[in-house]
Length: 252
Image (cartoon, rainbow, N blue to C red; front, side, top):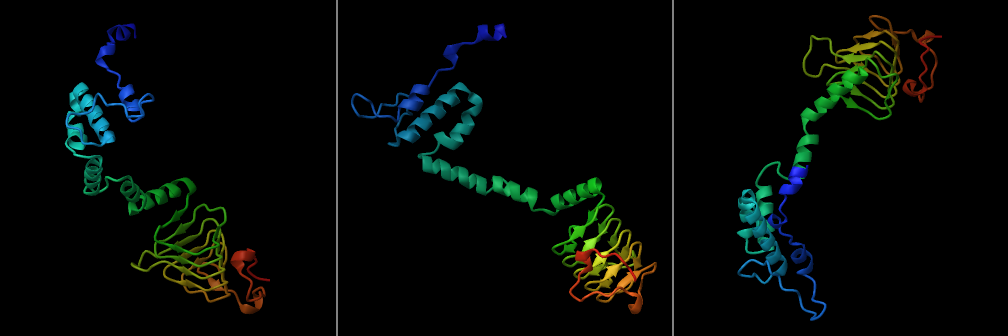
């Protein structure tokens, strides 16, 4: 540290604070602006631009590596407006040069969505494909081990317990995942496979494997899942939504 202090030469770093801070203020004795001693030759008549050019020239003389930068951006421009227009044009002609373009490319692409989805699957044990359509008022109870496929559709006010799979059979392509209506309750460990439709207000029992459509208001249990006989099914008012009441009795 002492060696660096001993070698420091103040004369090598001329101070231009006076020109920078006082050149644009009026002289307190004459009410006239103070003359800029460091202004570049051939004044443009714009005091601000003259000061900027003078400081740029001084910095370029002090540091040769900056000479081309200052020459292209400041010293070769006739005015501040021309310099700003040139810089803006250079930014606009280069894709991704502007900060908003970089932010858009970072946040609005498919890759970040897949990255977040992959990280969520790793941390929480939930695999919800970004292409799945999910309604409002959804409850993922415990939210572990839940898998929802790409073409799956889940309606409003649906409750899905842990260990539920809304997946494909592995034998289909394209639109291959379940369509779940509104107010549905899907019990723990249930699997709904294939492009089947689960009607509104339906209930899927815990551990059930659903391979066929389930009509509105029906309770389906078992492997493979079958509807419970109507006379044994608990009576519910049409406006009651199992996905909201979380009533998990499958029969009287």
